Image (cartoon, rainbow, N blue to C red; front, side):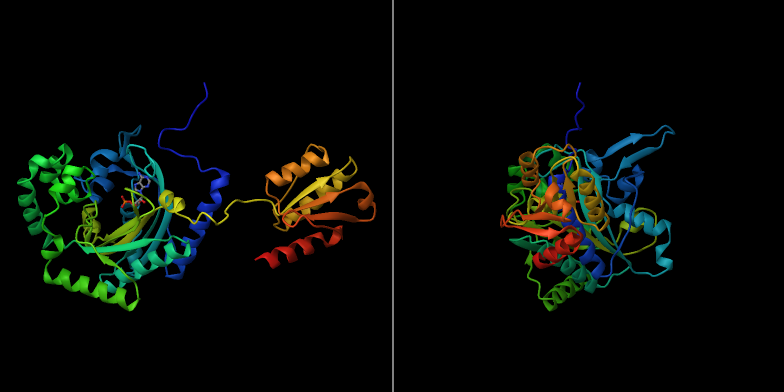
Length: 420
Ligand code: AMP
């Protein structure tokens, strides 16, 4: 029986990979320009890192984690997100002893046991950027500006930046109580999950997609009306810095991030091209996470970008397909060794080139060159070869010229330069 991939786990095939590499490459350039360094963390962690870090009463921990017991009886979990692991690594290796401020980014797969559908998978990729060790609101603005700069550089359009403040450990409990009181009067309208959330984590009800739950929260109190003066001051500063940076934003008092660890600044970037799963990325400040996972009192802020959704939003008119710069079509038995020698030289010079291994007819080789979208074709015929020459065909303009074979690499390099 043919073995198929697991539901919700996708292959990213070569005709798609150009987009992914472009997005990753741009992220590296932008993030590193803003002073961030890459960190690579394991995909598997102890379950308690997530249950304590993300919070027991979140959808992720309640029902979406890939958790299993290993042969030694340890409960392990495939990472559903990267922030908790990055914080663990920062604490475990005492990165703060080198410098209290760490700006880190990480690109890789995450795993959540969700119902697979368009834009929602069980293995999906995220790009995470986090700053640990700075409480100053300037860094909130810096992170948001970096995120928007990145999204603009990859060409994402129709974006809206939504921001909100979620308060802190001092002021949020009062809001939670008020919200709970309000929603208790509407409990009959809430779905089964939200009735449970009413007890465990009423803020999560804002994220519920069920229509009656959305109706129930229409007139709910806003968290921003309950925040303490410290949180208020912090948020005003964030807005001031965003304004200095010239970034437009929408104040969205209804935007409440799903994970327990968020405090104060929360933000999301939504694209109306995406339909109901319209958040391309979200993030915020989490000043309690480090303590939750048993560490020091270290503030943090960051975001995670869902790469599948991002890739689906890339401009349609951009070409990301990787095609050969040159296809070598050789005619006759004598030319094949010469073709190999040329292609070998090209490969060693980093020029993407292809040939036909089977010595098929010229027509069939040209058809293949066309299918592979080769930019040029070098036609090696026995007669020209005797003179050390070959025909170079431009597959776009369909023009041909005879060139001396030793000049091929330089000619190709010149042509590529002219097209950049
Ligand atoms: P979160 O970590 O839940 O805040 O998600 C951050 C981003 O990751 C979201 O805005 C999505 O773009 C993406 N994301 C989250 N869950 C999934 C999933 N199951 N499949 C694909 N992308 C996801």
